[in-house]
Image (tube, rainbow, N blue to C red; front, side, top):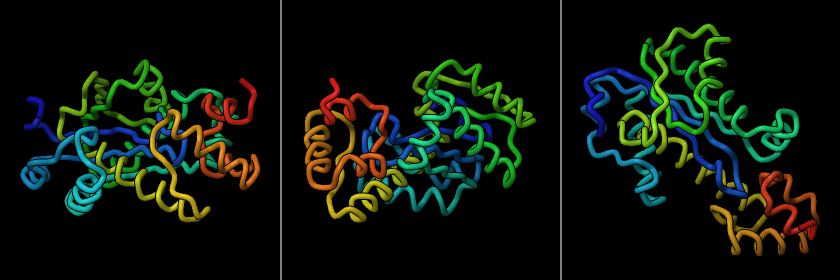
Length: 214
């Protein structure tokens, strides 16, 4: 973990951005000295198995002030159509999650993974009147607060993906690629095109591939 460990800070990260099926989830998590001591051994979500992420999620929720924003596919598709830009959607979600944690816990420093030009996120934060020092870093997940946020986001993504799958009677796959394309194709065959808008992010190329538009 990074040398920032002596500082209280809020970490923010997201999950589901590259997954065709399921929601976009953004989480912010406060870590101060008390939380730091309790969270020794938390690993970043990319290195955790699904089972580990779900177990660590419970520990993090218990000890850290946090906020988890979940944008389910139907809402995501609405917003994307309106905004037309994933980075703007991420900026809105990151700022909202940070604002929610600050309502519960004072903190000056916020660390986020560098998902795009950080100027956009800084602008949204300034519009909200939040007085913080935002640091967007490459490989920010090496910081414990960002690693904790990444676990919260990943665990919530997994739960919601599972729940969406149960709601249509078909387990949904993570990620993107041939197996996801095939699953989407089969869903359209059995349920019709409208099913994709309920369980998937429609702006992905997968949608055009599956509907024969590529």
